[in-house]
Length: 490
Ligand code: AMP
Image 1 (cartoon, helix red, strand yellow):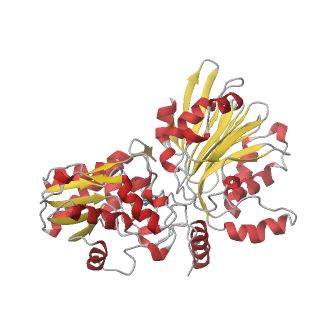
Image 2 (cartoon, rainbow, N blue to C red):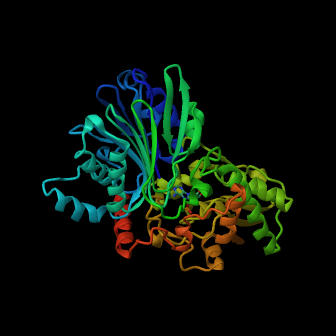
Image 3 (tube, rainbow, N blue to C red):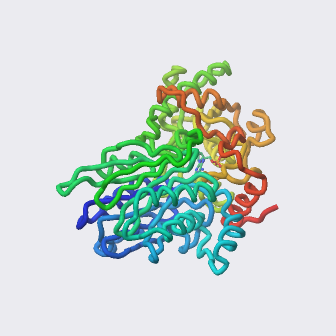
């Protein structure tokens, strides 16, 4: 997962402030690295490892001039850890193109091995980042067009070639130097991407971002989500063109609603906040079936709060904040190894004894992936004197690697894989565990959106919507992840 924003404003304007405001609003989508590329009369760039607030200083803003800009925050999936992999990427010649993406190219290794070497034997990809594959396939088509008279149809052709060659899930934004801004979403529309607009004295400013919260915070009105398989081209005179390049079924990632997106975002017309309320309501039904009773419902902060509140209301038990989160410790999930992750849960979540002592507690989280967080949490709850510790996850057991860019790519790490609920319970040390089932999860999100939209639920079901995920691809991705985290493959 990553986050981006791209802006096209009238000539003479400076977009960098809005780009940075937008990036701060999607810092949750990636804390590993951040970058901005702007264009006025030439590309200006600043990229670095770390949080947006650490990478950018006042002196960089003065340099990042121009009426076009692209910004990115990175959460490493393919590549990662290296300065060379920080987005946006750009090429200067023969057409200037800057680009950023969110997603994962599933045939990146194959493209590196075969496509690029076959087409241009002298070419060498400079980074380990799969965006390079998208950029060079896209640029390869535009290089054959007249850069001074670039048309929407040329951009459409370039995206059609990307769709033909590059497999996986990717939402992409970018600018073509002096010519315009483009945005496109993979044929199945797995990753979110939304178009927005604001009015300025010299005409409209257009923005495209990963989540609607970016537009809200940066002062843009959401216009609409980019459709699956659609490309949008906005030229320098800010004329908007749209082309539907593919008509595969739209299958947005349901995990965005479960965990990833901010609750104040609306994705493809569905409020993430309302989806989480609805997920909590339906989890309450599953819990009631267990026939168990508890004294208090406690969320694992932050993402589980909304669902836990609704769940507590539904089962008629007080909702309490039993853990205080230290906001200044990074997401535990991204720590490179299990040992560090386990230690950091305690650094991040400190319990409030009075909410546990002598009580039967129900702890609610969005998901249980490896079980590291929950194992620690159960231990802490017991140390605080809880009489019983029950767990509820408002998403189903995670069982299958996500090849589309959510960092949960190694099968053997899933705690639920090959275990019954009783065995999971024993592993986590809790008294019981309840999961939402897949159908209830999907229906809960549909209810929130008042629609019958279908989703990518591959990490729960193994049903990959792109239909082209092979064991070899999963093995490549797993090897990448393990290499990136410094662990050994076995
Ligand atoms: P684990 O400790 O491995 O079971 O991770 C579960 C915790 O990580 C939950 O509290 C989630 O909120 C969070 N989480 C789930 N999926 C992800 C992800 N892909 N990236 C970062 N955090 C995640």
